[in-house]
Image (tube, rainbow, N blue to C red; front, top):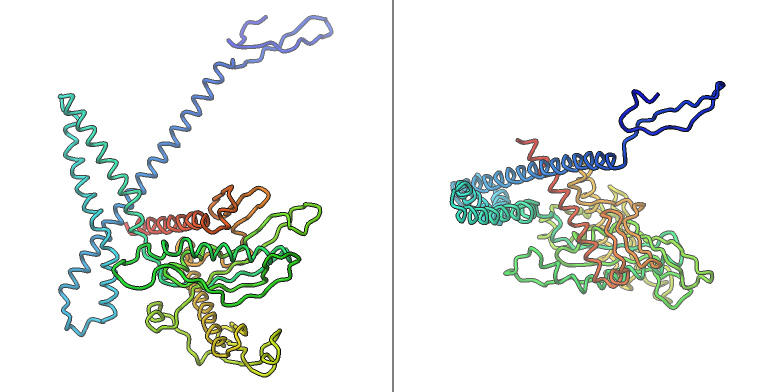
Length: 458
C-alpha cells in the first residue's frame, strides 16, 4: 500500500469513499533539520558570491585610482619640462597660460610624496614575496608580518590619501556666501523657525568659522581667519509670543570657504513641533526656504579670478522714496534703490538704510550674487553631469531636512544622516556633522565621476 513512497513522507487525512475503505495520500516533505541545512547552504553561497563581487569591485576601483594618479604624475612632469624649456622672455607664450600652468603644477605637488611612497612600498612587497616560501619558519613569520604591514600601508594610501588629493579644488573655495531665509507654509510658526535657523547659523559662524576657513589654506599668507556674519536685511513677522520671528532675513557670511560650506543648506527645512500657542497640544508642520548664493567681492582682482563681471550698462537704476515706518524721513528723501538687470529681468530692491548710497551698495552686492549663481547653474546644466554639479537642490520645493522637536530628532534626507540631539544642532555646534556628511557625499560623487572618466580614457 505504501510501496513507492518517498523516503520522507507524511500521510494526509483519510477520506471515506463509497466502499468505506481508507485511502492515504503520501506527501513528500523535507525534515526541519535538512531544511535548515539547505537554507543555510544557499544563504552561505549567496553571501560568498556577494563578498567576492564586492572584492572584485574594490580591486577594480583601486586599479582605476592608481591609473588616475599615474596620469596626474606624468602630466605634472610634462608640464614642468615644458616650463623649463620656455624662457621667461619668450613672448609667444601667454602670461595667463603660464600662470595657469604654474597653478596646476602646484595643485599636483601634494601627490608626489604619496606616489613615491606607493612605489617604494610595492617594490618592498615584491621583494618580500620569496621569503614567504622560505623553509625557515622564523623567516616566514617575519616575512608575513612585514607583508601585512606593507599591505596596510597600500590600503591606507588607496582609501585615505589619494582620493582627497585627486579631487580638484573648488572654483568657489574663496567665495563668501549670501544666505536668504524665507518663512514658508506654517504662518507664525514658520516665522519663529526662521529666527531659530538664523541663530543656528550665527552660532555656527562663531564656532566653526575659524577652523573651516583655515582648511587647506596657505598659513604663510596673511589675512584674517574665520568668518564674519552680517544681517543685510530683515522683515519681522507677527508673533503672539515674546520670541523673535522673521518673515525674511538676508545674511552675509564673509570668509574663505563660506559658500562651499553653506551651499548645503539650500532647500526647504521642515520643522515639526507643538507651538506655544497651541492649546490642544497638537504637533504642527511648518517650513522655511533657505537659498544660499555665492557672494562676489567688488574688488577687480577677485572678480577677474572668478572670470565674472556685471556690465553697469545692462543695469537700470531707480531711486524712490522708501515705504513703511520712518516718519518724515521716509516721505522727504529718496533713499530706496531698485536695480534691474535688463538681459535677465532680475530685480533687487533695498530700502533698509536711510542712506541711498548704502542701499545702492547692498543692492549691487545682492544683484552680483544672484547673477553669479545664475551663471553657475547654467554652466552646471550644460555639463549635464550631476556628480560634478556645483550647485544642487536650487529648487525651493526640495525638502532637505526635518527638525522634529517631539522626537528630539534631526534628519537630513539627502544623506540619511540622523541624530537624536536636536538642541545640539540648533546651537550651531552640531551642525558641522550634518554639513560634513553632505560634503563627503559630494566628494564621493566627484571621485566616482573621475574614475568613470579614467575608464573611458583607457
